[in-house]
Length: 111
Image (tube, rainbow, N blue to C red):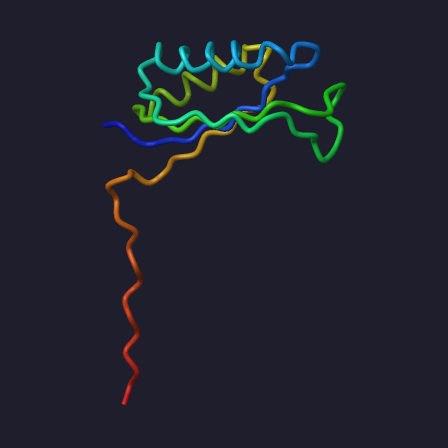
């Protein structure tokens, strides 16, 4: 069963800002190699961190929206943890595009 996910990756591009497009393309191909179906890639540019973490004070944020099997998320996390250009990663399951948002039942006033 395929679920819909969002992966926010913060890239460590210190000293190599001109190669961001190549890094994003490589990461996108990594998703596809593992069997994920990419829906959307949002490049959110370089942003300063609210606090300095080690020697890094900013990173390029990239958001991937994709469909994948649940067991693939652990595999992707392990793969990106070893990637020196991925500084942080966050995965979140999204509602499928066909799932309708359920509204809470209306409360009926007691008479």
